[in-house]
Amino acid sequence: MKLELITLDGPKISNDVYEVLVPTPDGVIAILPGHERIVTLAVNGVISIRHKKSDSDDQMEHFATYGGIVEVNPTRIRVLVDEADTADDIIEEESRAAYDRAVKLRESVKDLEELEKAKAEIDRHAVRLKVAGLRRRKR
Image (cartoon, rainbow, N blue to C red; front, side, top):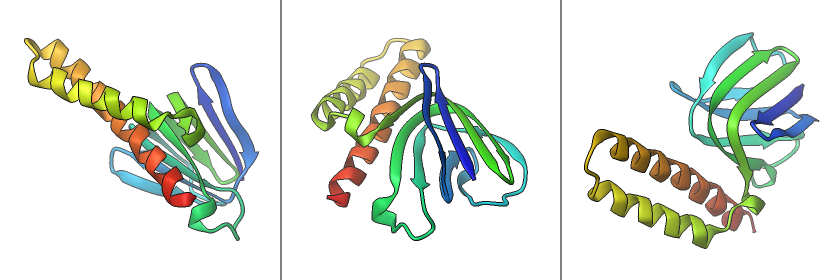
């Protein structure tokens, strides 16, 4: 089945794949060839891709993604997200520092707008750190 992972900057991946795990508001869903047609929201989280049926979990490719929409039919998955970062795109130390700054910001906010901004940054960098951790375990 064909996977198209498209960000605001353009396509990140357009390949045939065997399985895709996508974070949705109701939890992570696994999409395999022949999947029923659906359209759902993608929430901030990790999209994991198994390129071939024989690939082990350690061989899966992971993307940290932020918001978006998922459209599935039996032969194609189209994922439209704001951002999608691979483990190679993420510098773990920088993400850890940004996460820590966002946590401190959340503790000192003065209004709801600042709180939402801090929460979004915490969520974004938590996802990036999760993907970086998956890369470390893979090695």
